[in-house]
Structures are given as structure tokens and as C-alpha cells.
Image 1 (cartoon, rainbow, N blue to C red):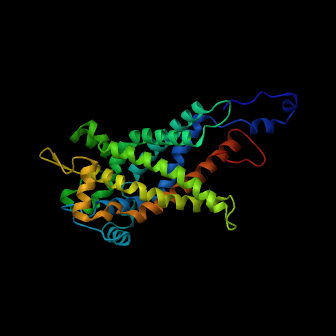
Image 2 (spheres, helix red, strand yellow):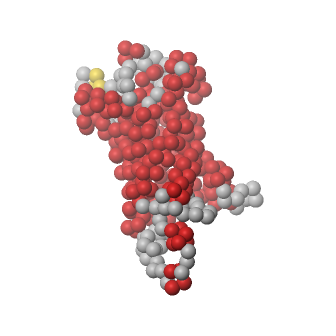
Image 3 (cartoon, rainbow, N blue to C red):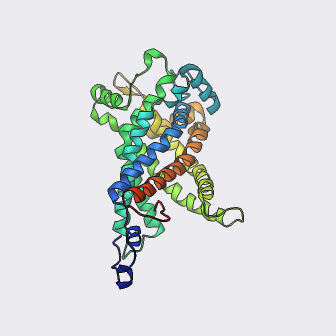
Length: 326
């Protein structure tokens, strides 16, 4: 949004006041958004690993089937050690660098495009913008997502059947070499669908949860309320998106035998899971997914707030009570 013209009274203001009105460049905002997501991932990566292992439990030929999240954690710790809980971290970081940065960039561009005379777009327009940005970001981030699923899935298989990717770049290189470049986008449809569902559910449920909490006498508009609203929103978002997520996970991890894939598509995954493992198996990995979603959002915003604040202080040389300006 362009700054309003400065009148005579404003022109006599101190340099600090003028600097305070300057916004952080968009390129820096995108960089900080991706970096904040990557920093948050360092804390929640073990939950992603457990969620993926849970979603793949029950498939044919799986050596280790996990009944609960705690059973999965105990099994991973016993067979792979504490470092094994961070398997696939490089892919998780690349996913944030691609998905989060792209989503933030597209959202900001579309937000400015649909703003009129300095007024932000309405709720439904913002929802549409969020879902569009999420889908495009998911498309860009699918190769890293594919690598993450395969790397976190490896430890549940016998040594002879493991893919053995060394890191995310080795994974991407081998997928291109062994399967073709287009296979980097395997499961792209469910990945984009999940992003749309997640953004739609989060937008509606977070604002509603925050409004409800602030309407009680126990909550004020602070980080504790934001965390509580994020967790309530995460409950709704997890329930809505898990069936799509399990379809995405299994498609991206499946192997092709003699040219025949294990699944023909997302609906085939859902039908197979319901028939062989039961209806509620569509929500396998619910607990780690839920406990990842809220904290990851909060941590991302905390890191983003601090990076914006330090940029204003150290680069823009602002003084006084400097906020992150999210």
C-alpha cells in the first residue's frame, strides 16, 4: 500500500518518526517468511516423521506397523536412535523454503491486487486469495514434499527395501535419474487439494476460535490467546485435511512394480484404506499432525516477528518501541 503524502506537520517530525512509517521491502518479507517456517520446522520435524509413519502403517509388506503415536516414537527411538527422529529434516527445510516463501509471495501480490484505495479485501476474497496462494505454493513445494515422505518412510522397511536417500538433494537427483523429472510432482493433486482445505479451514476456524476466546473473561489479545486459538483451529483443520493427507502420503511413497503402481489415484487410496484398515484409519497420525499444526504456526509467527523487529532496528535504524510489524 503506498504511503500517504506528507503534510507540513508531518515534515517537521523527527527522523525516527519518518523511518517508523517505512515498510520492510517485500523481498525481505518473503525471505523472512520462508526462514521463519524453516526455523519452526526444526522443532516440529519429529512430529512430521511420526505422522508419516502412522499414515503408512497398515500397508502390505510393511515391517513395522504402529498402533499409536507413542508406539511409533518408542519404535523409532529403539531402532534408529534420537537422531532418527529428525530423519528427513533437510527435505522439511526445503519444503518450507519453497512452499512457505511462494505462498507468502503469491498471497501478498494478490492481497495488494484486490485491495482498493488502501482498504483490504473482504473475508471471502481473502479466503479465496489464501486458498489460491496455498495451492500454488503446494505445487512448487511438491518435490520437497515427495522427498520428505520417502525419507521419513524409509526406516519402517527392511534394509534391502529402503531407498537410502542421503539428503533431500540426493533424493531429488535420484528421483529424476531413476523415475523421470515429472515424478517429482507425483501426488501433486492431493498435495494442492490438502493446501486448499487447510487454508480454508484455518481461515474460518482460527478467526472464529479467537473471537470466541476473547468473548470470555479468561483471555486477552496476546500470544497465549493466539496459541489457544491456533490449537482449536488445528483441531478443525486436522480433522478436515487428514483423509486428503493420507492419500497424498501413500501416493508419494508408493513403488511401481513392473509398470503397475500400488494405487491408481487418491480415491483408490481412500477406498483401499477404508476397505482393508477401516474407516477411521483415514485419520491415522491425527495426534502428531494436530500437535504439529498449532505450534508450527505459533513458532513461525514468533520467529517472523523477531526477524522483522531486528531488521527494523539494525537495517532501517528505527528507535523506540519497535514492533515486528506482521
